Structures are given as structure tokens and as C-alpha cells.
Length: 394
Image (cartoon, rainbow, N blue to C red; front, top):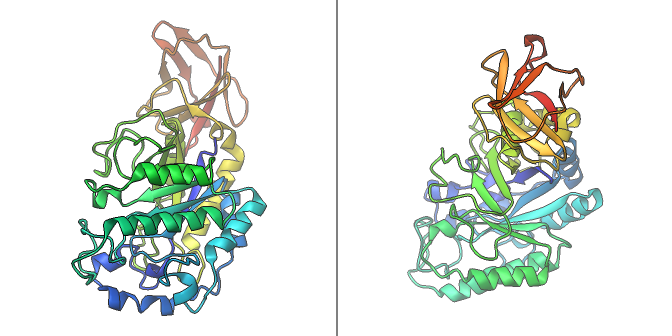
């Protein structure tokens, strides 16, 4: 029902400003990487501003990195000193502050938690990444899983009601015994309403409550991230970046236009999926102005058109080259993003049409319904270059 959420990638990797994979990509060993937290002092962090920004954009939930692949905990963990409270001059638990603000404002909070860990020595045998961290060639895999379950227990007992856990990193060691059943059962026992999802790029496993697609609309398989993934029966979510990076990247100026971001949100809803849109805050705790501007514009669009997105399901017509459909009750919303002709032919979906109107003005449109489907006349003057929305009442 929520349809639109905010993804936040934030950690000590924000300091060098080269994305969240900097430890692996720049082949930084563990001893050197340990110098980074001393420079992470987000004195401008204001969770109130972040939550207000998400709400104004029309977002209903926030998913934030509790731990990324560098193993650094963005919360006060008793199980390690490799965390924000022990290693940074800031010393405060940013997740606790965010959780309190989300609760006040009625925004659901999810934690992104990396199963993959480039820091812990017990993450052994190693997987396919993090091989230049300079760890000894030994470790106890079960102890690592115990440690991970321990941190998840902290997150699910000290931060109030959590909407869900968003796992990532299974793909680093796909043949390992991750003890998923035990971990998933533990999560559901601690918080029965907490959803579990995993970015393993595979068809969902038992115990998972939603299915996610990275940088891809469900079923499209355009990025190569999701080649073996078929769409199951679970609720769907797709995630995407506003430039080309998840974590703060100083040099990445490849900002997507607001139009393309809105269209991605609409297409996601038409694919019966939520859209999780990412920002990578700067190390000072501020979100860069380019992201703020785009989110503000998206919020203005959602304020006017959110009815055609929130609480809808993918419509009766599968996504087409011209756009998508969403549905709520007896209304089918037709989202035209690329009209190829004055007349739009919608394939028959087995319902008698009562009338067709323009969503923005309520003006009635001419149409003809026959065995082939519904032919709608869409006058050139009503076309919106981002999304022309029609309402079919059935």
C-alpha cells in the first residue's frame, strides 16, 4: 500500500566520497580503513529534517543501512567496538535518533543489514569480495552467523517497532550455510510484524515476506543483477539511485531527471511494486541539494497524483510501451508516458466501461469499446509530458 519509500546508504564510507564499496574497490586493508571513523563527525545530522523530507516527498517508509559490507555498525552495538558510538568523535547512535523521529511522524523504519562482512575475521571461508582487507586465513563461520544474529537481536529489541529487515550480501557466498531459517525465525519471534526480504537476486526463500529487485522493474532483467529471479507471490519492491551511486559519491554528477524518477515510480506501481529511492547523505549528515530538489518536485507530483499510486495494485493491463495501469476498487488508472498515436488502444480486460475521464480535470474522454478492447481518443492538448493519467470506471 505504501508504494514509495526512502533508501539511505550512510556510513564511514561517506568520508572518502567514493561510494559504499570504496574499501573493496580501492583495495583498502582493514588497518587503513580503521582510520576513517575518526573523520566521521556528522554534526549537521538532523533526523527531523530527514523524516520531514521523506514525508514531503510522499514517502511512507525509510530503509537505512544499519551495517554495510564494511561491517561498520551505524548503531551502538555491545557486540563490537567497530561502531559509531565507539569509533567516531560523534559518539551518538544515529539509528536510535531516527527511529524515535520515524515513530513520532508515523513513518515505518526498515534496516538494511549486510550479511557480507569485509571486517569480521570469522567471515570465513571468504566469499568473492573483500579479499584485500588483510584478514588472517582462518575463522569460525558459525561464530560469524551468531554475531550477525546478535546484532539483529539488538536492532529488533532496542529501536521500537521495525518495519522490516532488508538483507544484502548472500550473493557473496551463495553456497554457504547462512542458517537462514534460524535467523528468519528469530526475527519473526522478536517482532512478528517485521518483514524479511533479501537482495540475493533469486526467487524468494521460505521465511521471506517481500521480494526485491535491484535497479530493475520486476521481470525486466535489464541490469544483469536479477538473472535467475522469477516473480513470486510476495509483495514486490524495486530500488534505484538518484545518480549512479548508493553511498555518497563526490564525483558522481549523473543525476536522473525528476521526470524519469517520477516515471520510474509510476512504472513500479504498474508492475505491482513499491519503489525505494536512494539518497547517500554526506559525512556531515546533510543530504546534497540536488537530491533535495528532486524529492521536493516528486512530492509536489505525488500530492496531486498520489491517489493513482498509493494503495493501488498493478492494473489489469500488463505494462506496455506507452505506459502502465494501476487499479483501486472500480477505478483503473491509465498512466500514459509515451503516447504513440492520438488514439490509445487498451486490450480488452473483461470489464464493461462506465466512463473514462482525465484524472487532473475530470473531463470526459471519447472512447469505443469492442471485442478488441477500448479505443480512447486522447487530445494533444491534454498530454502531460511526464504522465497523462486517465481514469476508467468499470
